Length: 458
Ligand SMILES: *Cc1c(COP(=O)(O)O)cnc(C)c1O
Image (cartoon, rainbow, N blue to C red; front, side):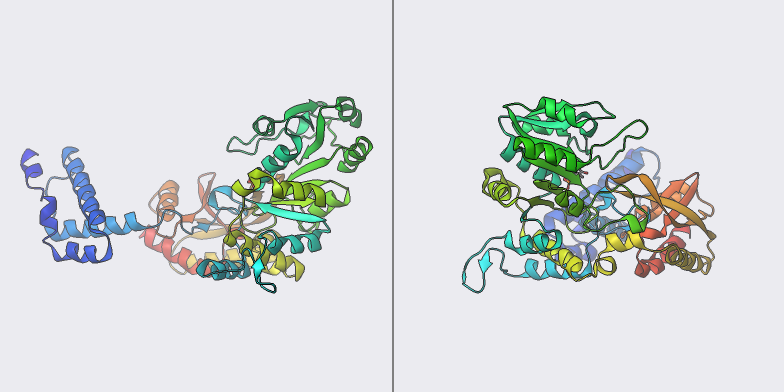
């Protein structure tokens, strides 16, 4: 073993090889040195573990360095193929942008833009203007602003409107979103006191009313987007909370979470309130995410009364959580699809949720055929998937998946091999079967998937 370890070439020897000097044309010299070191470290480890009893030739080692460099240089943030069927997969980046939005982002990213520039007057403009008018036209809101995400939106609203006082919320709505964003803790952070009222399953209007006092700054309703309380329970219609707010001259805030601009009932999705319903009920300030059911880039959208939104825009925190030109461009283009009534065709989130069963079945059959043509055993099965992104938690959308036979290997081997490809394919294992749910697959990826499975199984 010691003999073998002594024969490992030195780092400097690699730099006498043409393959390695060629690599230095592509990558920084330090990076290449690092790659050589890491490959040699692996070789040493394998010798010590008794896995390697003979040293490969120099040319082979150089190939390992090349391969290692390619892998190491691959961006860690890159596209994946989502075969889970979960449309709003938070770990996979939630919404896919429409082509229109992608184009708009690319345009402003590449060059200078009208971000804070008013073209007709040639003077300074406001970045809020790019989406405010559209949002107001689409929803009938008096005013709008956009911040980094909905968590930031909630923080800004609570800080600007509740600091130093109490905000009343139902015990049934003390949501945790994940990533430790919890309504009770956020209140503390924003400098307001949470006044929780009612019980977990029921809160009555009189619970709110009794809690109102000189310290009360606002009434907060939180959409329990990622859970539901069923059974002996009742949620108070927001309209009633609004009436109470009016009576005591207190603003009503609603954190809608997913915030759909369209009614999802025709898609078979129940009890997901729309932004319009909230505004029509008279809520003073409502906030929701840009990349959940809306189908745009990550953002927090705030709509509501002009005087209150003006206060939020002027707040010091607003600057710290403002959005950049790419977000605004992507959001403007996404909203334009709603205005042009092409949202269901253009916005992937909506089309993936709305796609018909026949269409899904046809896509599954096509993938299955592509696999079978390559001698791979596969079959189409009915499969339901959740919407994801902490939205619509109690409902599954019926669809189809393709079960891929792992051949001589195990289901786990197949899952790992497909996941570790340069363009990773993320599938699902269910009851010892490897599944690709076709709801979240793009038609243009089916060939690649079939070819990848063939390569992996070979
Ligand atoms: C998702 C969600 C949030 C957080 O939104 P992000 O855009 O992910 O920051 C806040 N509140 C509710 C009710 C949510 O569902």
